[in-house]
Figure 1 (cartoon, helix red, strand yellow):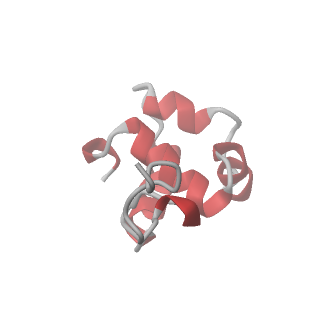
Figure 2 (cartoon, rainbow, N blue to C red):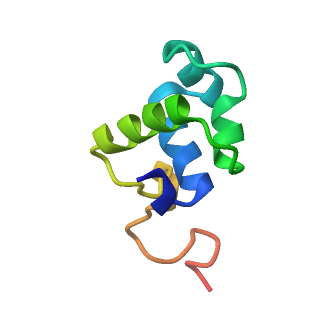
Length: 83
C-alpha cells in the first residue's frame, strides 16, 4: 500500500492520526526520521510494515477540510452581494 500512495498522502494520513510523523515513530518504537528515510526510498522492512499497517487500518479516505466560513450557503460574498 505504501508503494501505491504519494509521499505527501502517507504523511497526511500519519499526521491525521498521530499529529506528527515523529509521534507515530515514538508510539511505534521506530527510530527517529526512519519514516522519512523510507519515503525517500531507503528500504527498511520494519518501518515499511508499520506504515503499511497504519495505512491499511485507516478507514477515512483523505478529504479536503473546510472551515465553516468557506461553505457559505447564500451564494455571493457579503461585499459583492450589493453589487
